[in-house]
Figure 1: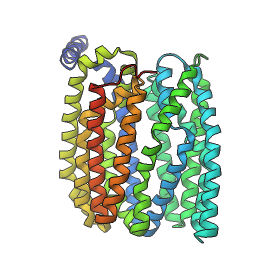
Figure 2 (figure 1 turned 60 degrees about the vertical axis):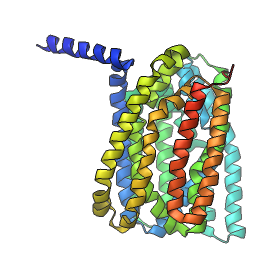
Figure 3 (figure 1 turned 135 degrees about the horizontal axis):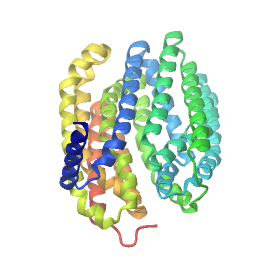
Length: 423
């Protein structure tokens, strides 16, 4: 009976593979653990959002998010694009690139530490805000190690060890969430909260990095081109990082910390739900990396379709669940339900996600430069203008417009690539 059931399952999988033009066995095997990791991350983020909304004042939470936005800006110096390049090169067998990639990120991050000290000096001597000055010093101290050690996750994804990556990432997320919630009960002091956040995440990532390097690396082959490509990707993401954090900074100066708190609560559920849409990106990436462009183009239409269907399902479910979710779990923020529903429409852009993955996996450097430059200029300009003129509603509209604008551009560059754009 068991053998017969396995045979029928195998036949069903083969049938799906012929219809979808996709390696279904690969998706089922890797997708389970990627989904597990996404769900664990979403649950941890869900609990943390509830803690933010119910245990912290809007002023403290808004200030906390403002400081984290500054930290994200300074993370530009850590060359985050190296993670993507590392994952790609490990997928091709160059596992020895792990340590050189990490050391390169650490070296560059020291520049960020110097800038962080400068920011602290600004807030202390000019801004006369000792709390923000000390917060900037905390960021400067942890910057060289906290994000740079995340190369272990990129390494495991390149090896297609999705189970181990999901377990380690989930352990980090859950531990960090629990530590922060305990801290919220013990103190409302912004500096203690920041110290807890940076220390716990840095400590766990350090442990997992050394564990991965000692137990999972099996070859010493290195790819020097990966560091160059990673720097290209990091340069492309400069405007992206600014665009991804300038919203909190603009709101902090236009509407104060309360405005920042309301905005982050409005977009948090949708951003967490968006994780379900991106669960298959690490699956597509190594597949696109090793397959020919002609093969990808032949079968990508099916992927567009199914990504679009899944996005529509997630958005529909979000509109059904969100109103009662806010009333039950976020009663202090019910005035922003409409903004949260409106923002969720941006998830429909999932339909074109495979095009963006293709550009990265096939090292379409020139296309990515143009895509990111145009999109991020549009995002920063629209957010600045609409936030000043229309407040939170304007900011939400700007983010939705940017998502669809960028998606349309990624499809354009997929269909009309530049000649000899690969490096």
